Amino acid sequence: NAFATDAIGPDEASIIIGDGYFQFQKDSGVESEGPEYAHTHEYSHHLQLLLGVGELNDDFSDQSAKKQELMADAFSAYFLAHDSGGDMTSEEISNVQEIAYSVGD
Image 1 (cartoon, rainbow, N blue to C red):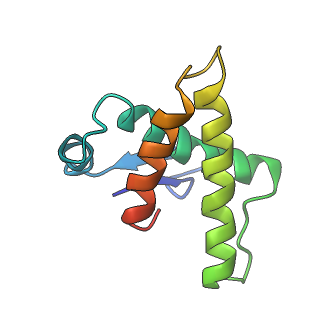
Image 2: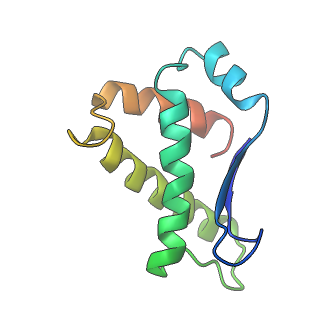
Image 3: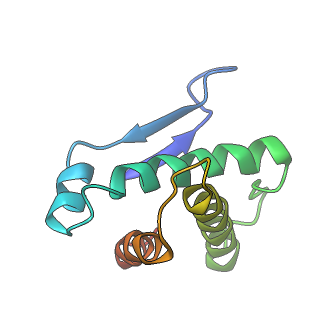
């Protein structure tokens, strides 16, 4: 699994990726675009916090969490599709998003 956190310390935002995450992507056939997607998706969660649009506050409902994940997907897809970003095709982005969705992200 992968996640973004700012709980490590002040000004120490981090992205933490578990050992098996990249193996899972390789086994799923997205080893070339998967790591870039994971990084941009988790970085997008940091952007949500910085922009003040990603705070769950006291709302930990499934609906609220889903909105946060979809927003992170949108931010990351924008970057990955951009010529100055990941320069991925819409098919490549759809493939990694489908894999991410299948495991609950």
